[in-house]
Amino acid sequence: MISKENVSYLYDTDSSFKVRKCIFRDHHDRIPIITKDNKIVGILYEVDLLDEILNDGTISIKKNVKEPVTVSKNTNLASCLEVLHGARAHMALVTDRENNFLGIVTMEDIINELMKS
Image (tube, rainbow, N blue to C red):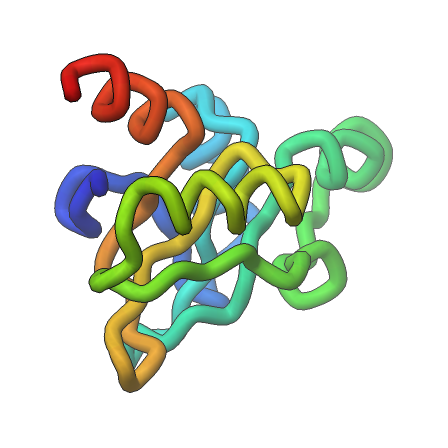
């Protein structure tokens, strides 16, 4: 897992400027969206924002946020792999019991860990 402290994420109330800055600065195509009290809202995909960025420049997080794939912090690697594969996703948000955002796990992370075993 990549802990929240090492993940680029945005708040659901962030401005278009902040979203654009995060996308261009960090070069991520998927950005977790959370509330100020650390609850998961969803995922913002860069590709979904391209039309807005190119046309009017205004980016709406609420309009573009997608349902995230989530796993519990206690989920083992094999189960994480199953969840990601089943959802056809590359990344899952890691949560605790109260749906607090703890970090992310990617398919690459899982494969790297399995290769070490």
